Image 1: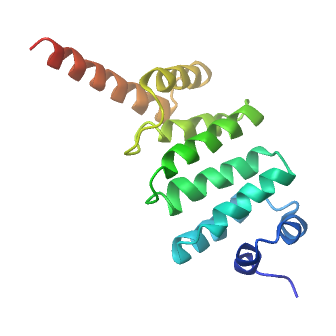
Image 2: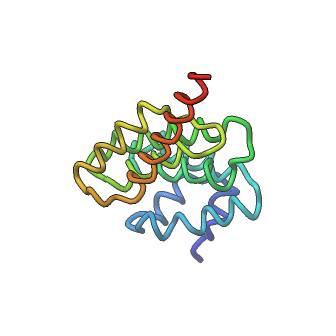
Length: 157
């Protein structure tokens, strides 16, 4: 009998996770793992992702850890900062993956805003160089300009 995602998470069985999830695209794993974390509000989903990282330093596990924290467990104080850390690490391990850079821009709009104006500008400009129509980058640049205008306006009063 194949163990369920829930049973693997609940047991924190890294060997079972690696054996059962080998070759499965992250897109297929991400949804049920996030659903589990949402429904159960269970930190073990993140713990398992962290344990997987100890065994295999892969961008996919960093991305999964980031998604769990930034989506399902974002109500935990500091979760966005930890999620941002994992997102940055995923980008370092897969520097040519533009979707990961787009994901980094998400951290510019979250309440804690772990992504600085300067870093958001760098990422957005880099994305626009490779794709001038990149929606996430265009929206980020608009937010940056609006924020700069507000700073200039409040500073002139």
